[in-house]
Amino acid sequence: MANRNQPSAKPTAAELDVLQTLWETGPATVKQVHAAMAARRDGITYANVLRLMQIMHGKGVLTRDESQRSHVYAAAQSQRATQGRLIKDLIGKAFAGSGKALVLAALRGGYVSKKDRAEIEALLRDDKL
Image 1: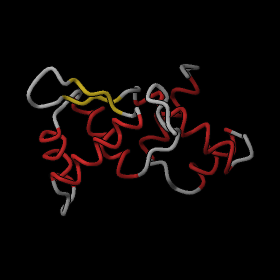
Image 2 (image 1 turned 90 degrees about the vertical axis):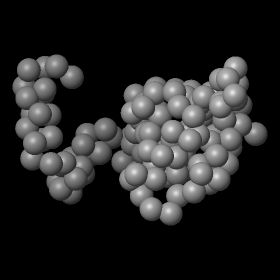
Image 3 (image 1 turned 45 degrees about the horizontal axis):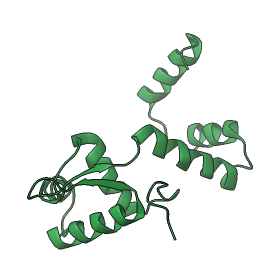
Image 4 (image 1 turned 30 degrees about the vertical axis):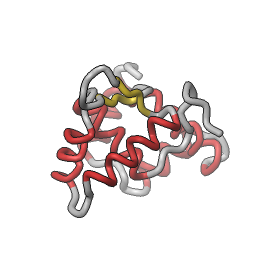
């Protein structure tokens, strides 16, 4: 069973969608999260978002402020911390522990835009990473 203080290492795609919304907007009600998600994709219902956020709260992925009539949810961990856990897991499982292999696969596979690649090169050149 998941510990409420330790969010699961691998959120589902739907959970990541909720987290992305909360990282962008900050703490929000289910209604606000639903509105933001519905603007990005069709077919998502308020009931689905409510249930998903309740499950995520139970897993410790979200915190919930119950002091107001409409509960306000927030991500339990920062975007950076969550991404770090996911990257660490991906590197360990798919790239035999090599961060270099992950970066090369992203660059060679065409998953990085020319603009992003130029920014990465500038950061490396200026030693700002």
